[in-house]
Image (cartoon, rainbow, N blue to C red):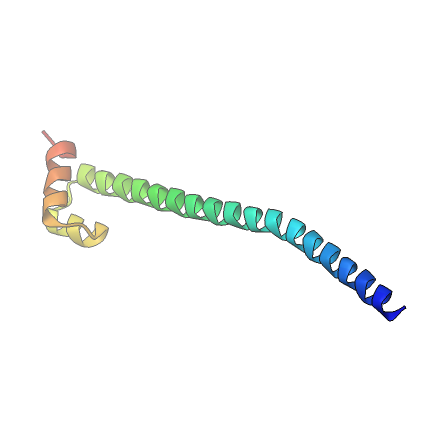
Length: 91
């Protein structure tokens, strides 16, 4: 009798382990997809911030700010500021 109960319990435990693994696998896949989406969203946000910063810098160039002001305000190097002024400045 006790052997049968142990065998039954062993089968139940195996079934529960299999079920847990079966549920865990899709959860792990969803978790990986969520991480990927989070990374993509962060990358998109950074690109969007960069585009907004560039638009701000171009607007400042159109207003006639100096290279030094552009460098300080937009946190860019002298070369970047000079290039923006050459491309977008007054002709």
